[in-house]
Image (cartoon, rainbow, N blue to C red):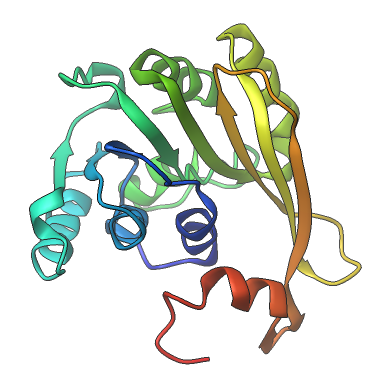
Length: 215
């Protein structure tokens, strides 16, 4: 799986202050876990059902300065049973339930929610979250209502939301969501990624500037 804007957005946006343990669900190449490691001192676990993705993530972890704080496991998330509870759980599950199936099985699994439906992702994550913990996702905008419904069913409260558009004055295509067990005022934001199709917006640059090698 290639590095994409969705993963970069979530890795830069997720609140990783004062966390000891973090979990990246559906880690792919390990991008988000690496970004969290750069932004915190936490021990970060990554899980993915795809063994090839885990091998790639492990290579990337071992070639990073954070390798002692990163680990990856190939496992179905539903079967994952860690010995700790997490202060932050993140996931970039690219759910495109109405899109055509990819001819490649592993990419099809990554692009569709047959292997881990959104409600199952949220329910499982809630069971692994510490009492003060947070979970953060980036989702297609049309999954917002489903995510909020599932969160309520698992006694979670929405605490942060950012609607993301590709270009200024365009409708949002993605939404960044953060939930916790603590009922608090919701922080809401919206921004667009590009000034043009070739130029990033100032907001996107400010959010991600610590991670890109070139402006």
